[in-house]
Image 1: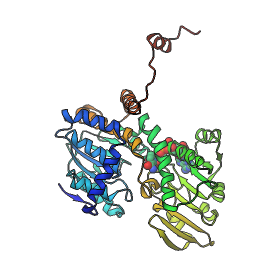
Image 2: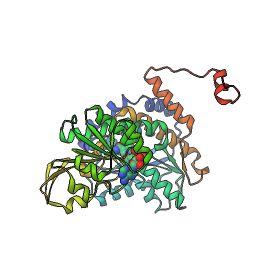
Image 3: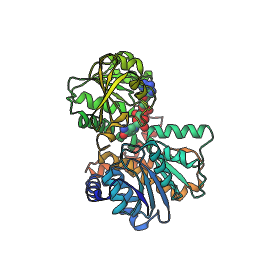
Amino acid sequence: MEFRIKDITLAKEGKNRIEWAEAHMPVLVALRQKYEKTKPLKGIRVAGCLHVTKETGVLVRTLKAAGAELSWCGCNPLSTQDDVAASLAQDEGISIFASRGVTQQEYYDDIHSAMMIEPHVTIDDGADLTVEMHKKNFNSIRGGTEETTTGVIRLRAMQKAGKLMYPIIAVNDAETKHDFDNIYGTGQSALDGIIRATNILISGKNVVVAGYGHVGKGISRRAAGLGANVIVTEVDPIAALKAKMDGYAVTKMEKAAEMGDVFITTTGCKDVIVDKDIAKMKDGAILANAGHFNVEISIPAIEKQTVHQNKINENIMQYVLKNGSRIYLLGEGRLVNLAAAEGHPSEVMDMSFANQFLSIIKLAQQGDTMKPLVYDIDRSQDQEIALAKLQSMSIEIDSLTPPQKTYLEGFNEGT
Ligand SMILES: NC(=O)c1ccc[n+]([C@@H]2O[C@H](COP(=O)([O-])OP(=O)(O)OC[C@H]3O[C@@H](n4cnc5c(N)ncnc54)[C@H](O)[C@@H]3O)[C@@H](O)[C@H]2O)c1
């Protein structure tokens, strides 16, 4: 076992926090109890590139219990929780290469170190590991999973260009993932990150949310719930209409730029906030990003207009602009919920990682027979996870009677 982490003495705290998360992840824990006996991942090498959070710690423990040999790295320079990394190295004996605040070079070095296990299966969040894997030619590889919208978009583009070399299961596209993790998870944790970094009162603020997809919808709801006036910007007419019908103001970024007290980008696109927008912002405007990469708010555009900058705290950088306004960028424009808070609550990661775990077993067993395409999650897996989650909450639901099923599947009976 090898590792590159910040501080091994943090392991005790990391272990306690992983156990806290575990107590809130009943579906994944039930899967662990089921599969630790049969060990379907015995002899399988898994390389993971996922935010090193306490919830990821629970996934790692579950994969290990199912027999996997693991190596791990972070999928964002600012998202690693160093205590969790220390516990995974010390208590679980995992090869882990991750620490908070790495440079671009260290980030890629860590990915390459994690790859050296020559994996049978990769787990990715954003597709950086998968792209790097395509530059090597490991005969071992059977398949991989992808956790987030941006990663799935990149991998579908690789498939379209005929460049995808091994099958990928799009975990993000499971309903029990994106309809919960992206909406409720990021909705809450992005606001949590902004509040932890700044301690501002959200109530009464104009909060501009760029993008009204899953993440944007979740954040808009939570910001409105805290009393903000939410203003949405979009490029898709249907998403914009949904935002309007959900009760939010909708306008172009160039207009929203003048109104916003807080800006949150959630698009997965680049250059969403650029020079002309920054120039119009109010003195004191706060900028945060919840999309996967730090390309949504143009940092070069901010720097171009800056006369000097001043670090307010670990997660707030003040930029004093040539026009005299001060604007504040949170978490270097990286995922604010991970940079300035702890990422998604364990309860939603329970379902996302249950999907990961079952997909990894599937790839270990069947990956060799699958074509190099991006695959959706089986509907039956989604249903199984939703049912297990409901059961963990002691919630019962109805089921269709045979006549109801026949009625819903037929076309003869109208009345
Ligand atoms: N912070 C987190 O923990 C977290 C969690 C899940 C997803 N993500 C990331 O968040 C991003 C969004 O994910 P999603 O699931 O909501 O995707 P989505 O496809 O559901 O929504 C994206 C929305 O942004 C809109 N959009 C695209 N370009 C735009 C632009 N230039 N201006 C305004 N709107 C624009 C699209 O029309 C779409 O409605 C992705 O990068 C994803 O990987 C982050």
